[in-house]
Image 1 (cartoon, rainbow, N blue to C red):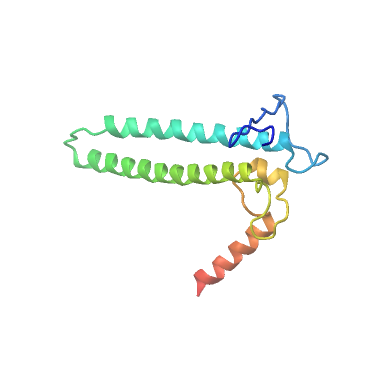
Image 2 (image 1 turned 45 degrees about the vertical axis):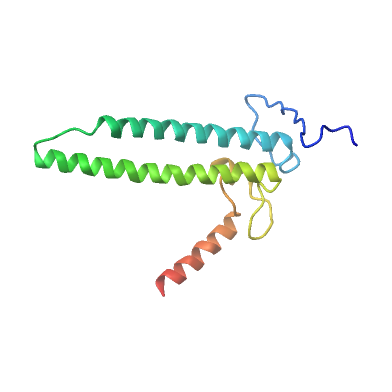
Length: 149
């Protein structure tokens, strides 16, 4: 039996200075870059979940009897918009979870189509990206062609 505890790996936390930004001159997806993106994804997810909780509370408190038809219609529209926003947030949280799984699996930062590294600038702007910009543009062009048929 090896020195590892069976089934449990001790993972040492990666130190990350507050001002750290991934740079092109360091090895791609090294421990510091992975930790940077992991923290960025978790912070984004927590922010979305907090907004979601606020939305739910707002919807629960917003249910009241409004006699004016126009005011009631306006409130219904607001509620529908909030529910759509919440649905988008839910889908975004699922994409964030998928990105966190890719970090754990060692697949994060690489295009799911070409296998090429996704630029650090793109990942910093959209940490849930799964394709290089070129592959994404190609994908969108193909989608447009199929939609126009």
